[in-house]
Length: 318
Ligand SMILES: NC(=O)C1=CN([C@@H]2O[C@H](COP(=O)(O)OP(=O)(O)OC[C@H]3O[C@@H](n4cnc5c(N)ncnc54)[C@H](O)[C@@H]3O)[C@@H](O)[C@H]2O)C=CC1
Ligand SMILES: CC(=O)C(=O)O
Image (cartoon, rainbow, N blue to C red):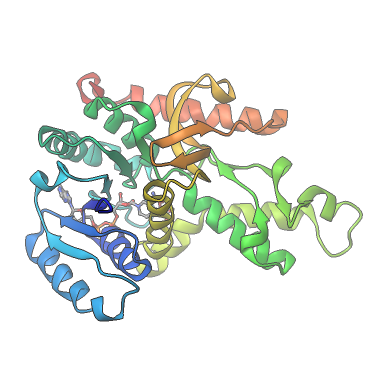
């Protein structure tokens, strides 16, 4: 008999409930457990999602659970915590969300969890580092959503600019999931043709347009939050993509927040870079040869994350 896959989602606000909806629509897990402080909301979500099952591609057993359900889980996805209000940066959320994470990760581990942890709550790079520390799990089994969403925004906008399907764009945003992230133009390509080559000598395509395109990627969350208060569909689909890569042992290359121990010249932090993802978590970091300007920007982004962690109360990270 085939093994049953169980995914637990902690935090069923905008992001967590959108993830649950996308999971159901894509028929990814056999069992989906929802946990939130707001029990009424979660119970309502479970009822509502169950009513969609006759239209889903396969059956998913969904219930409103508690931390004891983590014991049998293959994957726990954490989307609990405060989101940004207009004008707030992701790093501004650190104090509030670090305290929430300490108790959530404690409760997951106290129930004998031995799978993979996937973090989406912001500031995602710092909270993924904390989750790794709090959980005691090996670093390759603690993953942050990192720049998966920024990379998706980047691929979408590049595809739109060159009028080519976004799935034929290979390009990465790396660094902090936040204001110091950077585009890796040196490895961006459209159906195998380098973006730099496409703009060289072209009257149609200009580097200035691409620079503006990146600013739109970097600031996308602010633009969406100003209009509707939160972002959730894009990240929900990105988290499902990651879930599939893990549960289906895909060896897929996705830009996640992962632990660096020397790669890209960086040590002892979680930050967004491309990595190969499979059933074991992060199989390996894909180390791109960055040009000196990109390397410098990545270094700056790493320093900013380290500064944020160092500014936290010392007891918080232990
Ligand atoms: N990584 C990424 O690319 C993205 C990350 N986010 C982040 O995801 C997080 C969640 O955002 P939203 O869903 O919009 O927020 P939300 O406010 O709609 O939902 C948060 C949920 O967490 C629950 N919660 C709070 N403390 C809890 C605890 N101790 N245990 C269990 N549940 C708890 C709340 O009851 C609420 O339902 C935010 O930090 C946001 O910035 C949002 C979009 C993209
Ligand atoms: C909120 C957030 O992190 C995003 O949409 O990128």
